[in-house]
Length: 234
Image (cartoon, rainbow, N blue to C red; front, side, top):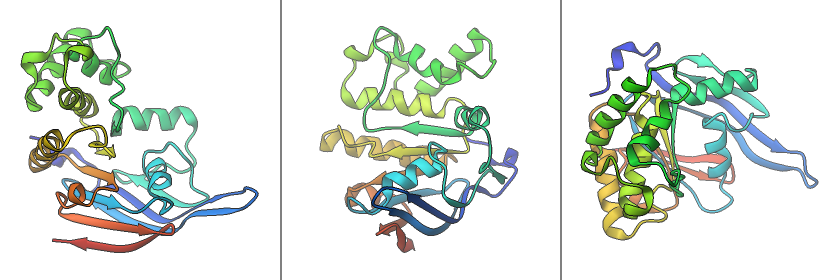
């Protein structure tokens, strides 16, 4: 269970009047005046067709790209204007990333791959391994801790990637098309896992073009032409 009482803000993430312009030529307005707030403990799905601005928004939320204007607050702290070194620290401590590609290191066990999520935390090796084993237990893979990536199924590899994203207890997890390389059975299993993690307090933001995946979220934001077209909760 994630302890939300230690968070300094009720919001895991806030975007305020975010715009992103690529100078070109031609000039491209990728995002236009986007504002949204994501509460701690929320499960949010962001959907949109190709060219809607999903990828640009992902990069902005993950501090991988700098907005042309606007503010980004992570756990109440504005990160716009921070140095590259400071932003690297924000990513390693406050954001968990899960991608369509699993990006597991070959030759390293599942446990070691998860522990890499704590590599720059200053936590001693024994504690890193202990926390990583506990996290593998949360994704039901403790029995595969010593297996290499090529000994794991696609669904298991993505669960290892989820464990790695969560092991440092981030403010939120950004999952970019996390089911893109999975079959329907593993997709359903992974979404059940995200739902369970969210029920335990993990803040999850899913970026997807898959409407069925987005339906797993209690809140769904649709992007169109770089703007928020709809923001619906159920």
